[in-house]
Image (tube, rainbow, N blue to C red):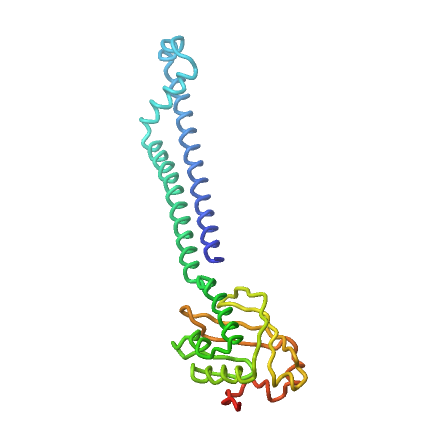
Length: 252
């Protein structure tokens, strides 16, 4: 958008130069006509004595302007410049505004927030799948395009196969998620959550506060990330929170 406003600013400045040039041209025309009108009347006493009583000063001025305007090639040229400049201001401003509006519309169409409603729905669906212990539904939320989807949480999973393993581990540990404050982000959505798992509770962490986020691509999840809000919880959980490790098959 900064580039668009710079374009508008430059266009306005250019239009200002045209307007000032137009005003100067008109003043030159008016000044030239006035001087010629006065010199013509001063050089023709007969004209003045014959026609002055029969016409008002305003009529003489208008008649002189029209008469001498058409006798002045340079005056006509200046008037043409004035009209052309006025037209250029109008057309140029219209074109600039149209291009800015078009660019803004294109930018709005390209922004990832075009998937904003889906992003919130996908985030909520992910939470529901975890709470329902529905591995198949959870995996179906992720895309299989490009380099493949990823999960970065207590483990790191890449591609749908590993994501399925990660989800099975969550189910085996009887996961439960209390989610709140869903909000839009540049690439998808984020939300706060309190996560409960049986194995974490055995380590003295009965409730794990995290901030979750998802990236959305083509109506599917491309990434899910869960970050601890309190870094000390990583020490308490020990090997149960290793974001760099691949998910293991559940043992129960």
